[in-house]
Length: 190
Image (cartoon, rainbow, N blue to C red):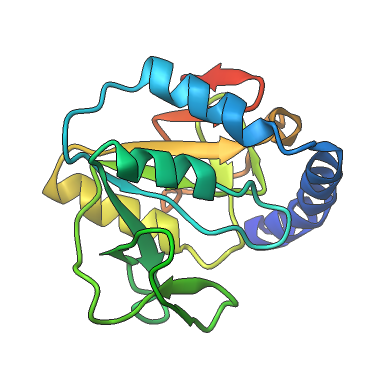
């Protein structure tokens, strides 16, 4: 079985596991994740933090992003620039208008200011303790991380439920490792 088929099979299982974790979440997971983030990540004024808006059973970061915005940090959301291209990151605050993108995601309008994130919060289906993640298969975050890491020092942090951890994520040389993963159960630092 080739790598794409292996990942496709793992995505199906990982999606079910994340959905179960989501269904058991009483809404407190994001506040535990936020506490781990605040206690362990050094922030300076105007740190550019890219979050994401939830799709399906992803953890909803909006309460955390709103608090970070109120603490004078610049919040951005990923925007799809095109197939096989890195993401763009545009400024966003709770209440700003959003546009629907091709993958069912919502993003800031084209006229929102672009920033290069200092901290990139990344969604996922599964992760391993080496810092590799299983996404949806589009490669957008891998291309984006590769590009951003050439431009500046950035911290890529996966956000997930603890139940999403697996022993090993199959990978190739295009897969970019995360610097850490923050779950509702704690921090994994590869």
